[in-house]
Amino acid sequence: MSAAGNSSVIVPFNDNGSASTGYTIINSALVFLMIPGIGFFYSGMSRVKNALSMIMITFLTTTIVSVQWVAFGFSLTYSETGNAFIGNCAMCGLNNVDQRALPLTAKSIPTAAFAMYQLFFACLTPAIIFGASAERFRLVPTMVLVLFWSTLVYDPVAYWTWGARGWLRNLSCLGSISTASPCQKGALDFAGGGPVHICSGFSGLAYALVLGRRRRMRSESFRPHNMTLVFLGTAMLWFGWFGFNAGSALDATPRAAMAGLVTTIAAASGALSWCLWDMIFSNHMSGLGFCSGAIAALVAITPAAGYVQPWAAIVIGSIAGIACNLGCRVKGALGFDDALDAWGIHGVGGVIGSILTGIFAQKIIPKLDDQPIDGGLLDGNAMQIVYQLAAVATVAAYSFLITFLLLLLIDSVPGLHLRPTEEDEGLGADISEMGELAYEILPTGQEIYSMKRFSSSDTS
Image (cartoon, rainbow, N blue to C red; front, top):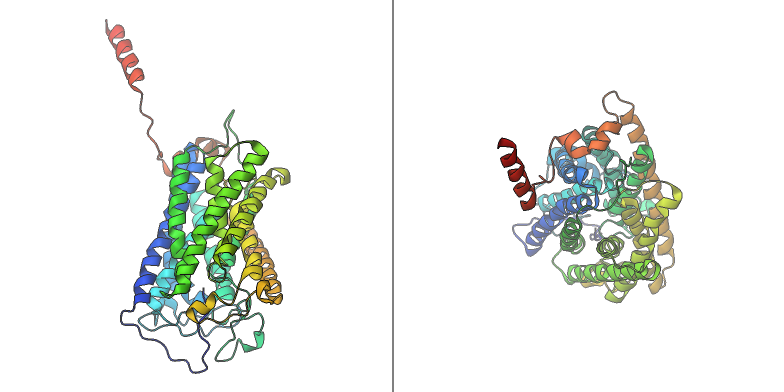
């Protein structure tokens, strides 16, 4: 999120209906749209027998995280009276969430709007993980994982990165964390390169390693079963990303407009670079490559969106398209099954984007809404790259390790084994877990005609 003011005299803002409140409500709806978007994207990429369960798990995740967010998730992530590592229960049950603002975190909108907006970030993030474990997870153990993962991984990492007193946000001035006005000069992450993408990508890697490779039935191919759904999911994600990135300004300001502009520029650049890279090495320009390149670039521009100029978005998007393309290819050589490239796109893209933020961040962009920063390497602040690297390494290692341990713990509980039996995996999660199908296969006109002829000849 964008930095809040650091005045020594903190006067909570009481909002009775500003433009920024309406702006945040609209952006909340856009971010919500990304949740079914990732579901459709993953559904299209999976085999047909798992298509419905990939959509189902994204909605289940939303319901679980919504309840957790109200109970204690929001307070752990954004209370302004916590320590350097986690918030407290000052806003548990959404206590004191009303028209007043959080003066150190989101000073221009009411906490009610801010809590809703951030809720959908918290819902989307664990849904991304299941791209790595696709086609071989059970729904009930996964629901248990979502609850504990959100509490032990997402909430702390989001607090470190965006919380008023989070240690990554105040990395250059750790001594100020306990003061009335923390300096909030540390790792830069405008909209979620670390808490959303690195977190989900490296957690997905842990999930893929714990589960092992998918089983292939006879001559089955691990190819997308419905590219139309993949394009639909991509369009919903691209559309929703305007709320994700531009909305993270938390104000209806010129900086928000710039964040939206660089978002779509990066997506276009990433889609092109991925396709061109494929053309060079495989002589094909696939729809899956186009969609993957666009998503990879959107991931990479996320931490940088409120700090970089449009020309830098082209560079970031293009680099992300190629780097994530390579990241998706390396899984075969390393022997792990990141089924739908959650790590290859979100993990790698989040790392690339966070590091490049340290290079291309410039003071001129945050000045659009009077939010001073020291800039990155282009502005002569080489130390910013060190802060970015520290954040990347910490978030990647922490999310991988805690997720790995959570998975082993859940799998050891009777009845909560993570992976379905070989028979159920062969049937697919749609039938074995849900008892439903994504598609009812109807006979063609020729098949109906043939059946009628057979029936007629049989009765005669």
